[in-house]
Structure formats: structure tokens, C-alpha cells
Length: 238
Length: 291
Image 1: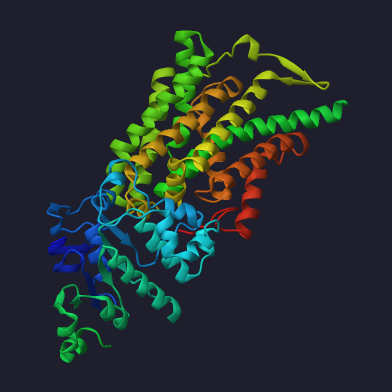
Image 2 (image 1 turned 90 degrees about the vertical axis):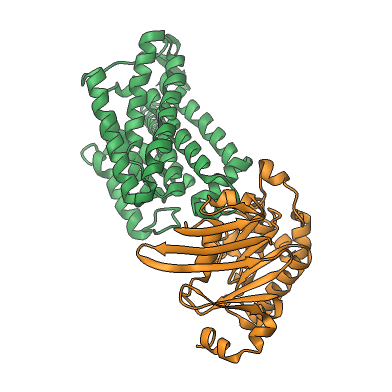
């Protein structure tokens, strides 16, 4: 098992936003974390990466306990994080944004299943090469999403946490982002995906977790979810 | 050069020298704010403390260059310790906690300075070859102020090279816009914070020692320069180095030409300038963030 999250409990002030959340990602898998807005999907990713400190529970990655560690330490272990709102550095060029993803020192030399560098990123995202000198803020939403994914890949992660990558994108870019995630996975990167576009999620994922309010509601394969309209209605339909 | 022209040029150079020193103080302040989200109110106190350290080092070594090198470094180290052991601990209390803490640090420095060196003005003597006037095209101008302009310019160029040509500079520029994201890309952001805090206080320290021979060393030094530096950060745009540079120079020139032409209004000129800028651009000239 690559990632194991066990009974995470996270609070924002007094509000208990993750209650005994557990999930796992196996090597090579794409796992989708689905649910309506405000159920705690993004908080789950943030608690794994360390941007939010869980009060209890465990985050085990490749057998190592990373619970509540600094984000930079978690990332150096081989987890990459692509945040919900992309968080491109608006004042830096596309090229500099990508360079920010490179890990320096020992973490940069750590072997990973899928090594990425600028050439490989440009091959997968030709638009970033065309726009390499432009400021990040001048890119369209879809291009910014490509940049956010490319920037994280520059650190050659073994596991990618991707938060709502198709949100607010045109149908053309939704398909591009979907295809890119599939290619990245084929290149050896496991993915934990938070996605509101059910079609995209179901077409990519091997397994699915559904979140109810702050807790896990269902877990199973895509086929199991497809065969279970009641569960779908309970956790996904508005 | 005729006498009137010479006077204009001399006032311009005065303004430039003061503006450059303002920039040395304001640049650290704006970088710290951009990265850490706090306007450290201890910054001006560190600036003043460096002037006192400079005085002390000069007393002991009789060497101005030692004062100019050792005192800012000592203050920079204090800045690092302050970030590492005080501000970082207060981080859990949010920005208000950090802000109040920096006020506390400023008060402690103020009172410590009075207790150790008293409240009298102290004089910092520069070497003979930096004293007196130099003649440039018929203009007699103090050598020491030219030295200040040159030194500040040199520091500015080094700072710019680091910020725009090195990986560390790239990280700092990225962290100014989104430190959490930089952290989530695998960069040891707490270490970078500490470094920036140290370099910021070091630069304020250089300005403190450099200005001491002109203004003398006294506890009120922090108020005089501090207020200007804080206004510069606001008007230039929080976190913007180019904004801080532009406004520092404008303020320097406003204060020197203001004294010459409309001396009664001179003290409020920069407030008027601030009001006009903030009405047109509430986030400051190059400011992007509104939070």
C-alpha cells in the first residue's frame, strides 16, 4: 500500500470537519474521493499534505508516519499536491512557476518511479512551452491548471493529490486535463483525485470513496458504485 | 554650474541619499510582510539598535568600517533569533499575536537602549577621508552622502541579483505571493522566513549605522525613520520591492525639495502623497493583495 489514512480527525476552530476519515491508495492506482460540496474532501487532502494539522489519526506513506508534518517534509517524501484553486504564482513567469516545483538537495535526488524534467513537462503540456515567458496570471483557467499540474510533476512525485482539477474549465480543457491525468498515471504516478465531475472521475478511477458530511460514506470500485443507484443518490445527487 | 542650479542638484542628491537609506529599511519590511503577512513593528527599533551597536563598536575598535560591518550583522542575528524563538512561537495565535509581539520587542529594545546608553545624543565619527566636501562640476557636496548613495546602490544591486538571478530569490518572490504553496512544493519555508527576517533586519541595521553620523544616535531615531518606512510599504504596495524603491526615492526627494521650497508644508508632504495614492490605488502603487 502506498498511502494509508487512518481515522483522521480535523477541526477548523470548533467545527469538526473530518471525522474518523480513512482511505488508502495502492501503488499505480487512481482513487477518486467524491461527495457534495463542503463534505471535507479538500480538507482530507490538506490534512494529508500537512497544510491543515489533524488532531488525531494517522497518515502513513510508504510505511512512514507523516501525520501532521510540515508540508515541505511530506512533499519531500514523494507526495505532490495540486491545490483546488491552482495557486499559480501570478508574479512569476510560467517557466519560473515550473522551476518552483523542482526539489533541491537530497529530496531532489531521491529516486522516484516517474522522473520528470522540463522537457518531459513541455512534451505533455505544449501550451506551457509556448507560454513559458508569460506571467502566470495571464494564462487562462485551463492553462493555469496545466501549469499547476506540471509544476507539481517537476518534483517527480510517486503520488499526486489533485483537488478539483476540472472546476470552472471549458469542456475542451476538462477533456485535456482528464487525458493528462490518465497519461501521468500510465507513466507510473498514483493519483488521489477529488473531483466534482462524476463522469471524469468514474472514467479515470480504479476505486472510489464517497464522503458524507465530514465522514466516509462508501468505498468500493467504480463498478460497485455504478451498480448501486441508492448510494449514488444519497451521496452525490443534489 | 550656477549657484541656483548647484543648490537644486545638492538638494536632489540629499533626497536621493535619504531615499536610499529609507529603501534599505523599507525593503526588509515589505519582504517580511509579503512573505509572513505581518508588518513587524520591531523593524524600526532594530534600525535604531544598529546605530547604537555601531557607536559601541566604534568606541571599542576606533574603526568605522568595523562598526558598519559588525553592528548590522549583530542586529541581523538578533532578528533571526527573534523570528525563530518568538515570532514563530506566536504564529499559532495568528497575525494579531505576532503583531503585538513585535510591538513588545520594539518596547524592550527602546528601554534597553535608554538603560544602557542613556537618552543623550551620541556622535558617530566617520573616517577623515569620508568627511568634508568634494567638488563635482562646481558643486561642493559632502563626500559622506555620496558614499551613502554608492553603498546603498551597491546593496540594491546585490539584492536585485539575488532576487532575480538565484534559486533563493525565486523562492522568496514566490513566497511573497503564496508562502503556503511554496511550502507545499517542498521548500523549507520556515527556514526561508528566518533568513528573510535576518536579511531584512540586517539591511535596516546597515541604514541605521550609515545614518548615525548625519542624524546622531538617540532613542527617537526609530520614530523618525520608522514612520517613513511604514508609509513607504503601504504606498508602494505591501510586499512590492519595486514599489518600496520608487516610493523611497520619491519620499527622499519630497523631503529635501519640500524643505527648500515649502518648508512649512514639508513634514506633511508625504502624508498628502500617501493620501492621493491610496485614494487612486487602495492597495498601493504596485500592490496586488488586498488582505
